[in-house]
Length: 62
Image (tube, rainbow, N blue to C red; front, top):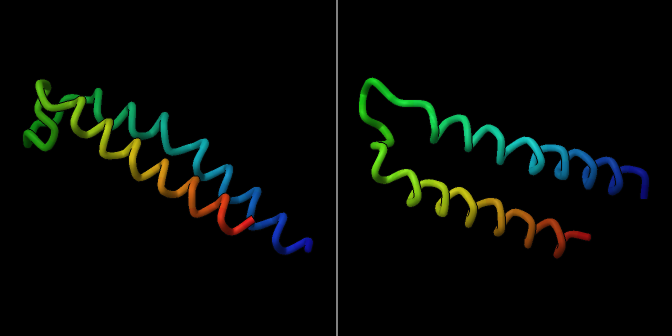
């Protein structure tokens, strides 16, 4: 039971750290043109779907 709680807490910490990182990554201009300014919404929704699917897996695990 203790191991399951530790895994749950570590996964929650990771999921709480992802949104600020994605926001910084998308809003920072890239010199190589990885994320063009006009396409930022597409990347944000892509990462939002990854976060949502990860939370779904977390709920299924618990």
